[in-house]
Image 1 (tube, rainbow over the protein chains, first blue to last red):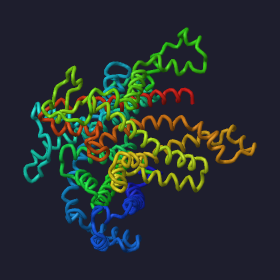
Image 2: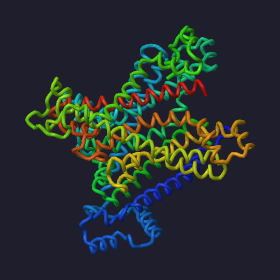
Image 3: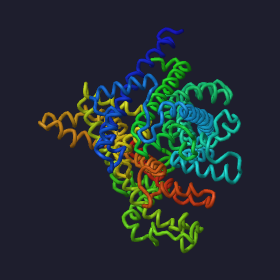
Image 4: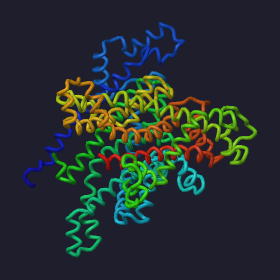
Length: 320
Length: 295
């Protein structure tokens, strides 16, 4: 290991330490937000016609009569033990529902991330190599469109073409893996492609500008002068450096994919956390909203942590 | 993108005749029909948002079930939806809440984000550190999750969900304003006002803010596009404008439900949304290019 670069374990340790305040801040944020419900959570959940007695019973049951910091610490402690309480609308065990649904959301996000990279990087390189000609403007145009199209509209067009006209993939729903992994994967194709579209468009732009910068640099000029083949210059030298700015935005891209998954899940009726969150929002089920948001934030922070560590493994320069 | 300026001929006699001050803007517009189209489209939207209720040929919520899923025709330009309502009229009525939503969101983001960024950049030191730490922490989380939680808390409605979205966008705006402020904060023309005894607040509003406004303006234009996208997404989920009132996202959601019966129904509302977002982004691109040339 070269002098001045931290060992990978030091990096892992530092990133882990940095995660703790972020997660705590997230929990405080969610808890604080739910506290400012006008009129209080119990009143809101029961509706305007509820009797004062029913409200009092629910308040007692939800533990709303205790001091705020006790409520917060209790919620946090129980959450750490894996107990997120029960839904106030249908008495469902929230932890159980979340553990059933979470894997699908993570799966969808990760497949979409992979697809976005697989689509975005080659297109970005293609665009940069063909700078200022038709291929470049076509790729930039399509990626611009990809950034401006609502995900659910892309979903509609995709369902229309691939599910209804061509019949290649099912339109909605995702059967669980136990019922056959083939059907499972097949049903995830359209949702993950839809989710990947926006991220792929962003990756095209990052790769393209990174490549253009690398191609105009002095080491590439030297490489041309030395008579290296274009393939060697493009892929061995330029691409490697062009991907560095991309690595720094992978976290943001993962974040937007995770958020986008909520929408895409609702469109394709994927039984993941996103559909659960949206239903809970519409039903004013505060305990569920609070819990799902907590889990989403924790999982999201963990995914970015993994991406961060992955980048540190790949590029020693990011090990600060 | 820089290609808008690259395609210009540098030695245009008309440019020399034009007054030096406005020639840059004029040149930018002249070289780019796309930008003109974007501005024209946005202006048209504003007109429709203001007068759409008078211009629309039909009532947007009157149903005509026997005539449902009608195709494009001269009577119903964009056809009718699943309960026979005129799609074109619904889109025209929907322009007002769509633009209003963007305005609510952007005003909220500005009211929170600009003072936040100004304070952080101008006051510096410990305050800057604390304010920016909060920005970083907020930017880590996916915006839509915070927006959904906030909307639940405030109650589901268009105003509330766009308020929530504005709050979610505020930190990113604050960061842009802060970096703009840092550039001008220690320039001579700002320092010299201190010699004249100008107050800190006066200096900030009169000298620092106008000079930091460029990057903020670009950011705001892009946020307009994102707000439009997010808004249609949220009304697609049923969070936002409540039926039967017309909204673009709702029209899309309804057409998706009837995709088997009438697969083409989602095209018109989708195109309207995409054109709006593209126009905002196009104007943002042009502003960025223009300001980068000048600044």
